[in-house]
Amino acid sequence: MTTTEPNPSYVGARPDLLAMLSSDCHRTLDIGCAEGALGAALKTRNPAAEVTGIEFDQTMATRAADHLDRVLTVDAMTALDSLIAEGQQFDLVVCGDVLEHLEDPWSALRQIRQLCPIGQVVVSVPNIGHWTTWWSVLARGYWPYRERGIHDRTHLRFFARNNLPELFAETGFEIVELRTSHRLLETPGRWSRMLGRCLGWIPVLGRLTAYQFLCVVR
Image 1 (tube, helix red, strand yellow):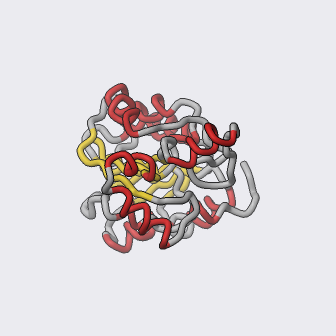
Image 2 (image 1 turned 90 degrees about the vertical axis):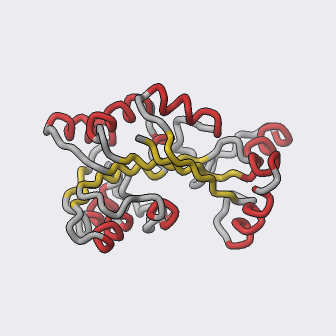
């Protein structure tokens, strides 16, 4: 387990995800909970909610423990196995930018299905089809390894828009809602988001400025 200072890109309450979460869920599992900000926001919205987090980074997990009911400080696959062995059940599971970090996201989703057989699962994944990927590979002949974002060097799997129906169908889910966030550039910023949203209305350019997909599946 790492004890380095957390990447600030992976902390925060994720208002984009919160907007998609049901407020009447009582038992939530937040996979990759970081410092627990999203779970804390859920508990503020519904004080009766019980939130369990999974976070491999020990520094962030320690901070998350101040906000959540339980935090498992192990890798996601080990934690999911443990929760299944305990017979745990959840009515909401959140995977905020987690699947792309896993060696086998298909197995993880099948485990999640056992833990949340009738509830709501909310997933966000970055879009590898963003124009910055094409520009870097085709124009520069270079894969853009970075510390954050779509090309985070710790990503093991990559998803574009048309991968998603297959990903979920193979693991026993169906998409009930799909939203797309747009950015012109990978770096966060008001102008990047505004220009990305404007270009997102143009069919071809919209595919190239799609930065992230947010899905509700059942």
